[in-house]
Image (cartoon, rainbow, N blue to C red; front, top):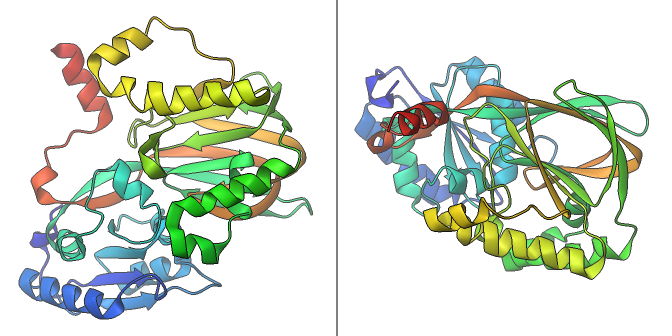
Amino acid sequence: MAASDDSSTSFAAIVYNPIKVDEERLRAAVAASEQSAGWGGSRWYATSEEDPGVGQAKQAVRDGARVVMAAGGDGTIRAVSEGLQSSDVPIALLPSGTGNLLARNLKLSLDRLEESVETAFTGVDRAIDLGTVDLERPDGSRDQHAFVVMAGLGIDAAMIANTSPALKKKVGWLAYVQGIARAMRGPNTVRLRFRLDGGQPRSVRVNSVLIGNCGLLTGNILLLPEAVVDDGVFDIVALRPEGLFGWIQIAWKVLWENGVMRRSELGRKILSNTKEVRTLRYLKGKEIVFRTEDPQEFQLDGDTMGEVVAVRARVRPGGLAVRIPATEQDRLPHDEEQREAAAA
């Protein structure tokens, strides 16, 4: 449904991180767009350290908001998405911060605030998949969360846990170099048992497991080249390097093959005739369950979630509506694109 169909009784909600946004500029942009669209006054919900946006998004839905804008970094967008998962209220992305990964994967504006705000009032909705996880903690407690980009366990999550928030604020994604260095000092191997889509359990030894709804990372790194936000499945990769040469193979695969060759038709044809390297194992599925031998750090969309001993990740096809510009309303869902390509 287009936002322009709403009456003046409709209102938008803005869930914003007061640390990461220019509130004065944001309020001015919202006031201009809501008036132009004929909407009522917007309502504002600030995030906090205790609640990064889940409770605020739920409250906005209870209050009757027709769209919820998430103004902040990837953590704010993830939290708002989690708060909206049981509703039909769309999220509008007002990206800020280091990664902006969901906006990048959806090819939305990253640095044009007024344009993003206008889209919230005048755009159309696109359904994307939502990932959900059930986490078991070392003390036996359990909790549930959602994610929109990627979940990770192992050296990936340890890197995020070891990255200084202050340094990240100063130098952006380059701060992760420090986190990588710290993570590499300790034991890097994770032993775990996993079951994919109810299949037979398997035991593996890995450095990281990443469960992706999207494939593009910070720095334009294409880690999961076949990941699509609305195909109803996860793309999963296990990193299993053996020594320096293994890491070189991973870097070559991700930076050159995925990042360069897969972006052209000729490159994809060449890669279709090459063997996959053992250091990267790709899988696809709708549900994956794994249990680790020892407690491991876990991350969702770039935010550390603490230590876990077991994870159950499931995909909710079309579980989240994202407001996109009306000029892109002809963008097809993945399954329709596949059918049209096959017919052609």
